Image (cartoon, rainbow, N blue to C red):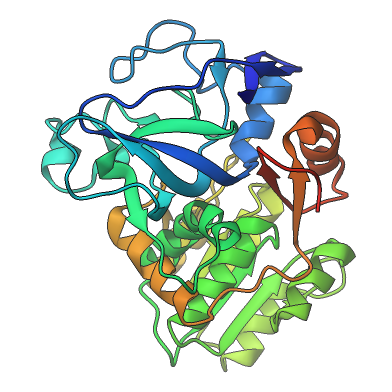
Length: 351
């Protein structure tokens, strides 16, 4: 079968590898679509970062690995002992490996497991025609949710988890910094939670146009003083939550300046460079910065439910490609900013 195999920085090959076979407690998936994530880009251009160079304690795997942790597909075989899933079922994959016994796992917050692993980063993943996963990663897809949307459940759950940590509701005001895929996911999540007063700060005209087409209200931070705008819009109260999905210093500075007293800035970005934390803003406002990592099964189920009720739209920001174009049409196009979100069809051509 075809698979996108990662060997190290700037080296991903579309290779012919053996089809995996299910073992006890696992199922074999025919992958429908697999999304290319920002983490994948970091690995391709600057890795290995998360991909292990010695055997991972939970998966036993190491470089080289088949990439891909954002995917959905159809079960084709089940391993010994699997009775609650059957061939033909369509599923989205929650790709977390967890130890089950560390303090976070015992508390139910396995998304911060001390030995956390990800299918497609610490094991052979979904950027292939087939992959094998344990049943605790499976989430059934309703008939109304396509495999294309199913492949977006993982990144949209990252955003939904962050939106939940913001503790906002229908009468609140929120500000999102960054209109990439996670910023778009935050907008969908907050909209799904009933918020109408949501603003997206994004300097890129292309990204602003893409999220505006979905119905979002945008601000150009090169032309507008975003904290001043939010203060005026809220009659001085400030935003009830701000979300940094940009990962750059100006965004986190503006975000902490936007929020009201004792309100959170939720960080759901990867920071390539150290940031000077705006502590004076936090102290004078008694506000806080809250980190957000991954998701739990509750986030997956919430996103799938919203998708089933029409809460997500891929128009204008999602591109589908065949697996042979992973490097040129995927990594390089995303890195250059000519595409926003790419889904790989391991068995097909670009669409």
